[in-house]
Image (cartoon, rainbow, N blue to C red):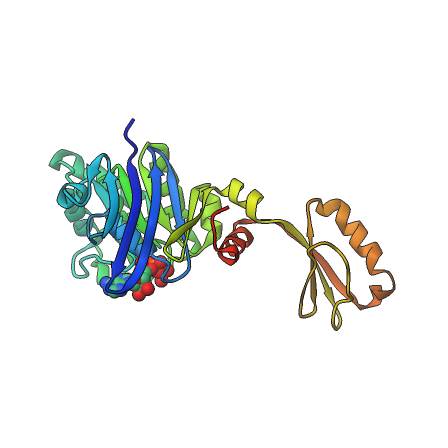
Length: 303
Ligand SMILES: Nc1ncnc2c1ncn2[C@@H]1O[C@H](COP(=O)(O)OP(=O)(O)OP(=O)(O)O)[C@@H](O)[C@H]1O
Ligand SMILES: [Mg+2]
């Protein structure tokens, strides 16, 4: 079966500056692929190449089997694209915007009402349906912006930091909708700097760095490959020295890597011994995507 997205050997330069180099990606139906990377890593560039908006210098990009370079317009008609900067018509109402983007995305007149109502309902926009977008708050505008990319139920959806500035409720609604859309068979490419969101979405992750793919895999794989839980001991004053394998001192904190926090926490407290009076707290920092992400960026290469 043709994957929804296939990127092979993608390279992109802006003038002398190389932004992407040899990037390979594949995403199938029903999959959420999270693209992570620091500011300037090339996430937006990658999404806009896939959307047929930015040209690329090397490699092959196929969206739903269609070559983006040869047929950018055909690709644009079949995807949903919520760019990093919100772009909706401010003087038009929420509903007018959604009807416009729905029609642009090919929703037939007969189905438009139901599509618009469904996306407004999912993103709690029904009450604001007749409000001009310029009169909405920044977070509400974010909802409308995302809704415009989703209203026509495209097969491939590109969401570039859709939850920036969104309140927790907006974020929750959007994540639920993204998960539901993927369950219905669409492919979602999602960028975010909020790694907790990516864990909640249970996405497959690609980490970009130095223009390349540094690591790739489901969240649980990246966490087990690149992160370890730590015991975090906080002291009054500098922590005592220890031969604990991999121990790191971070000001008044002593970080002790552990594969088994429940057992090692007892060992660590026993080890502190005479220094116990200076011990202020002991916490367990569980291995998570954030620690895996930092370790991947630090290592800077594919495992
Ligand atoms: N139109 C452009 N012309 C020249 N350079 C550009 C252009 N667009 C992006 N760049 C450069 O390409 C690099 C990647 O930018 P891009 O916007 O893709 O990063 P990003 O990963 O989306 O970052 P952020 O997390 O800040 O959104 C940056 O160094 C940026 O300055
Ligand atoms: Mg960006």
